[in-house]
Length: 325
Image (cartoon, rainbow, N blue to C red; front, side, top):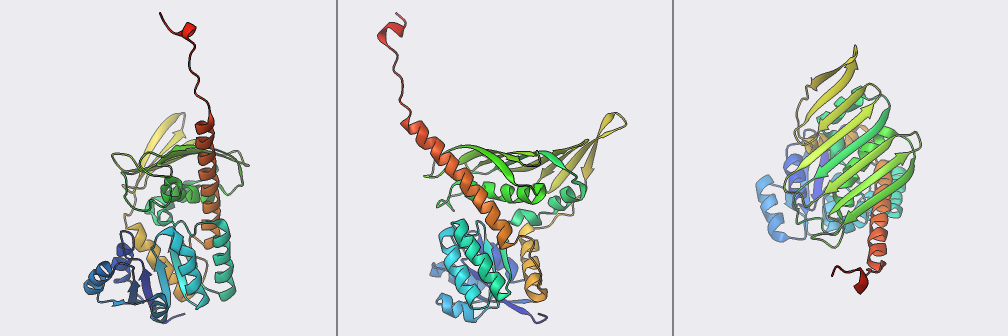
């Protein structure tokens, strides 16, 4: 497809407003429509970028060739399937859907219609990841930390589906081996779902990954470390910087990696429009995102089971004889 793409944004709240900002400046694309349940937010975005406000999903669909969905997760499946059935390309924010079954239906629908289904695992477009991929051989141990202050958004899901899923998708992409076992712990602090979680993954090829996510940290941290034979790679996604430690002639040599900094979301949306125009598989496909979702749900289930078991554990009260006199 060589024509300019008409692109719109569904949901222009805390995440979607950044989609709108970038869509307004995309080459080979015209920003033609937005839709949001909040009329005040819609009007502000409409005025700022001169984009039409659709009154409903049907009207929105008529104005676009492609759309990004930045609504809360429970609406992802309904909106994405509506658009795909009407022949529109879709980029949906992560997690792709609420359930792996819904994700599979979207993947099948996009494949049947020959449409692009891309998922917003934006960290795959962070420039530091290309540095890692260029130096990666056979990862043996991976450590990921993703911490943030309390977001006051996306509270319909826990921190595993909100934050950890970014690193889970990257790890599955890098390791490319079936998960053999999962250990997970987590606790709710300010939300109904878990606000801090840790998962330890063992893969069939021997690689082990230790993944921590928190949304109750006083500061942000997004670090990713990979250990492989004779080398240790340390990446800082937030600052877009990296270091490589290698064993050279019997001593450890540290090398700072030059990274051409750029906004990952801008790169992601540019890539989406390019896929819509030229065809081809997106960097983060629906099937790849579905695998990350399935793993995240497994981890969440184990956390909930662990908390339920803890609630059922009787508290032992010491006998009077055991108390100090």
